[in-house]
Image (cartoon, rainbow, N blue to C red):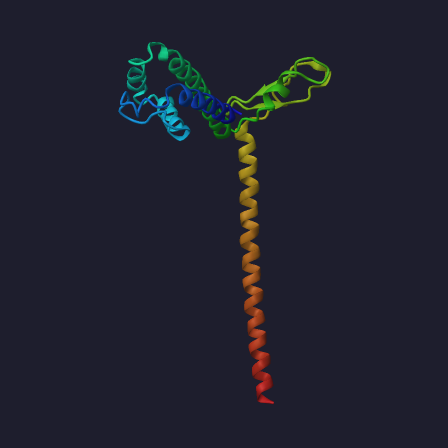
Amino acid sequence: AIFLLLILIFFIFGVMFTTLFKGMYLDGELTEPFFESLFYSFFTLFQMMTMDSWSTIMKQIQEEYPTAWIPFVIFIILTGFVVVNLIIAVICDAVSILGGVDNNAGLSAYAAEDGRPREVCIDGASYNMIEQKVEGGGKPSSQQCTTTAQRLEELQKQLDDLVVAQDQMRRVIELLSSRASKVKIKSSSHRNRR
């Protein structure tokens, strides 16, 4: 949505600047063809949006048109706000992805279906909010709140058990495949004797 707004602003100001200031380069009033065509206008507006020498362009045009500063300043302010908002949106999105934050999780932690605030266990280690159903509407007890460290230990133990089981399965498969190859060798040598 922000990108489309930026394109719209560029198109409006590109047409306006081309209409207002076209022909100044051909008359020798400008050092570059800043607004001679729509393409040049878009390129110049992009340069102005990045704040690269926009004041020198404005000063050259202001020598012929003293009130030319008005559309320049309006364009700089509009694109400045749009670009800053775009950058902030990208940074916020990146932070939420890196932090593993679910945009809907925050809302669900504050209000239950009946409108009462939900009781939430706050895990001190990771500051994750874990929704707990509390019987009787009281605060969650220490038994109901499990820490991340305990959960990680349980998962690590399960993972270790799976690795051990996988290693045992691999040994059994190797043993069976070696026995099967010995049986094949014996049976093929037995057939060759006949």
